Amino acid sequence: MKLLLAVDGSGASDHAVAHVVATAGAWREAPEVHLLYVHPPIPIGRVQSHVGHDTLETYHREESLPHLLSAEQALNTAGIEFTRHIHVGEAADVVLHVARELVCDWIVMGNKGHGIIAEAVLGSVAHRVLSLAHCPVLLVK
Image: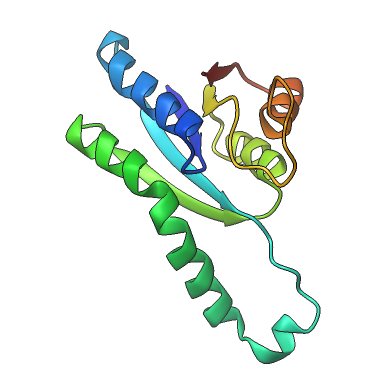
């Protein structure tokens, strides 16, 4: 069983992590957990002429780690092994791509997270993932 746990450092994603931790013992076998954080893209334009690829990668990794910290601590405390993934792009598209690429059986995520525009009822990322995913999606409040 492969599980993609998408987090963004929000309270909603902390609830999704807590749900995975709380239900981990119910699985027949421990799931293969892939912890994903998607860093929003920065405007490219002139930035690339002044900043190298390696510098951008370092920036994305360093900026992503605080958003992963609480999820990683919770999973480690529960003894749940995971693989960390950090990607850059539009969150919903990256979640869908990674889930397909890894052939995940489930996607677990919070239903509201950090967004540029205030979201109504269901977050736009969650809505898009729910609509287009190839596998079951569990949205946690």
